[in-house]
Amino acid sequence: MAQFQNDELEYVVDDYFDVAEFEDNDAFAENQLRRSQDADSDFEDDFDESKVKTDTSAMEARNGKDIQGIPWERLNFTRDKYRETRLKQYKNYESLSRPRQDLEKECLQVEMGKTFYDFHYNTRIVKSTIVHFQLRNLLWATSKHDVYLMQNFSVMHWSSLLRRGKEVLNVSKPIVPTEKRPGLLAQPLSRVQISTMAVKENLLVVGGFQGELICKHINQPGVAFCSKVTTDDNAITNAVDIFRSPTGSMRVMAANNDAQVRVFDVQNFACLNQFSFDWSVNNTSVSPDGKLVAVLGDSADCLIADAQSGKAIGNLKGHLDYSFSSAWHPNGQILATGNQDTTCRLWDIRNLSESLTVLKGRMGAIRAIKFSSDGRFMAMAEPADFVHIMDTQSGYIKGQEIDLFGEIAGISFSPDTEALFVGIADRTYGSVLEFNKRHHNQYLEAVF
Image 1 (cartoon, rainbow, N blue to C red):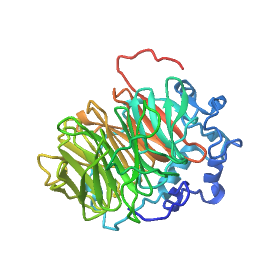
Image 2 (cartoon, helix red, strand yellow):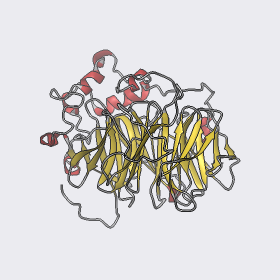
Image 3 (cartoon, one colour):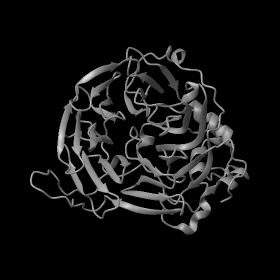
C-alpha cells in the first residue's frame, strides 16, 4: 500500500489521481462542475432534509434530470464531452510498473449494454467520504432499506424507505469500550480516521488509520470493543471481515499494513489467532464455509490460506500489481480478486494453476467487488466513475455498466439482491446511489 501521512480527514484522492481538466475553452471544467451549485459547500446539506431538492428520483431521471443532480445545461460542456476527456486524461495509480501490453488479450470480451439494475434514487442528505485512495470498502447494505456508510468522523445509517440519515457512531470524540474483563486488550480511542468497515448480523466493525479496531452492536448503546491492534508505525487497518467459523461462532478478521492478520472472537473480543505474511495485507475475505481465506496485499500474487491456521495452501499468479479487493461466490468455489492492473480475476479453488476468467474495467483499478447473495450477479467498482455488474449465469460475458462521476467509496448489494447501493465521495456531489433489480414481469413502476 502506498504510504502517506494523513493528519486530518480530507479527500486525498486528488493527490494521487490527476483529475480530468479540459483544455482550450474548457480549461476550468472541473471547477465549474464542482461549483455549479452556488449554495453548495463540502458538507453543507448533510443533515438538512429541507434540501431534499438536491436528491434525484427515478421519475426525475426519466424526465431528463441527471441522476447525480449535475446541471449539465448550466455548464460550458456536455456530459459526453466531459466523459470523453475524463477517459483520456485519467491516470490510474500503479505500484508496479510492469509491461501490460498483453493484458487486453487475456480479458474476456463482455457484451455491455444490459440492464440488470435500474436507477431508483440518489440522495445527498448523506455523503460518502474516504481517507485513503486505495481503500474503498466504506458502504454496506443490511437490507433493501438500510445502508451504513462512512461520512467524515461518523458512521451514518441511511434509510432509503424513510429517506432519513442518522448517526450511528461518532469517532471524533473519545470512545470508551463497554466490554471490560480481565485480559481483554481494550483501550479508549479518539478521533479515529475510518479506513475500512463491515456490517453483518447487527455487528458494525470499523478499522482505523492508526491500526484501530472498533466493534459495535448496532442495537445496543456504546461501543462493545475498541483498541489499537498494533503499535507499528505503519499500522493502517486495511480491511475487516465478519464471518462465521465452521463451528458457527462469529469472528472478526482484521488485515493490517504491518503484514499481520488477526482473528477475534465476537463473544468476548479475545484475539484468537495472528498470522504473519511477507507483505502488507490489503484485503482478506473468508469463504462461505469459514474454512479458507483469501489474502491479498503488496504482492502481485494472492494467497489462499487455511482460515484456522493461516497456512498458505495456494498461490494465485496472474495479476501484475497489488490487489485490494476480493469476494467469494456464495457457492464457495469461485473467488474474485481485484487489482491495480485494472482487472478482476476469477479463480476456481479446485484448480488454482491459472485464473478462469479475466475481466477489465474502463479506466482504473478494481477496488471493490461484491457478489449478490444468490450468486447471480457480481459487481466490481473502479476507483471512480464506473461500476460494472456482471451476469454470472452467462459466464460473465453479459454486463451492465453504471456510468457516473466521482470517487467510489463502496458498493453493496442488499441481502435479498433487490437493491445495489453505490457510495460517491465528492465535495459537492457526494451521495448514495440506489439501483433496484429489474424484474422482467414488472409492467408498472411505482412513482416516488
